[in-house]
Image (cartoon, rainbow, N blue to C red; front, side, top):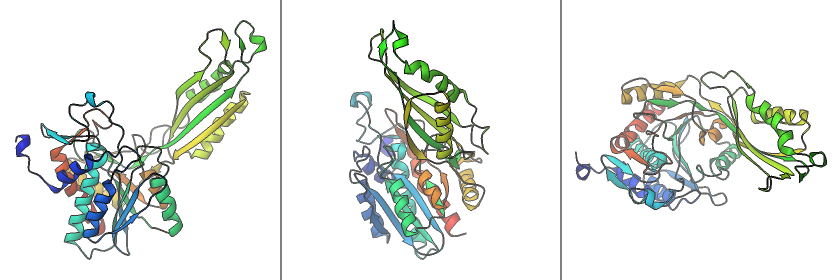
Amino acid sequence: MSDAMIATSDVLELTRKLIARRSVTPDDAGCQELIALRLARTGFACERMRFGDVDNLWAAHGDGGSTLVLLGHTDVVPPGPRESWSSDPFEPEIRDGLLYGRGAADMKGSVAAFVIALERFVAAHPDHPGRVALLLTSDEEGDAIDGVRKVADAFRLRGERIDWCITGEPSSMARLGDLLRVGRRGTLSATLTVRGIQGHVAYPEKARNPIHQAMPALAELSARRWDEGYETFPPTSLQVSNIHAGTGANNVIPGELQVLFNLRYNPTWNAAQLEQQCEDVLRRHGLDYAVHWHRGGEPFYTPEGPLRAAAREVLGAFAGAPPEESTGGGTSDARFIAPLGAQCIEIGPVNASIHKVDEHVSIADLQSLPDLYQALIERLMLR
């Protein structure tokens, strides 16, 4: 079938409308308002929750019983130079059965599919048991400070209950539904400053080189075997990502060294424990240092239960084989929902092109996504 003959659909049209909004994080560019107006017509109660420069939308239907939340984001990463793209990244274009545009896979396609699935579910089951909801933010691709993190804080204060959460991050590897993400590692970042004394390289006895002082400690931290993994999680890893020191001259001992490093950790640890372990090493090596920690989010893991069972059944039907169940990858906003007591999984389209030039999603996969999400909703809410 030629691109011109591809049948239009609600999910395709909504995805194109969302891509056309230049919602580079944290600017929502009107995406959430478009969705809120649409869901309000279906009977959803829509609450706009703005924190700082970040827009968040909470749209819920039903009352009492279990709560199922579909979690997504409307912001996208910057597209980079326009000339690098085959077409304008904010003018959605169909070529060879693929929909191109920034956010097509990450994750405006999933957001559009969420909306369509919720509309269909409520139309078919207007008096459904429990509550279904959509939670969107415009701060997932950025600092993730005023997005779902702040919404979760507000939910905690008002006693908002969430039983299950499905995040639409692009999780599939080769075909739609071939991977089910059942957890994510925690992330902890550090900005380490080691103070020395600047001087001439010919007179090292009159200076104190922070690079030389820090090297043994950094070598120990980076070589450490933190654990042997946990369930399906890989071992915890510390990676040094940036080192900066000096004036640019080769005859000056620097007075200060700055090091950036990150830990991706499994549920064996929490952030406070890792901070203490790292600082114990720094102190033992006698460093004059300061360290700023940023806790990006604790790990989460969804054990066997109704959510994983429903997802395994639905994805197996769509992909033609049971999905791989994984805790790999980076982070997602589910890390802020899981501490509320929710079981969390991630299901979305193929992720091969996310954050890349010419980002795209398969039209066939996009048109299947609402059916996939609706089947999940019905398995959980009508069981």
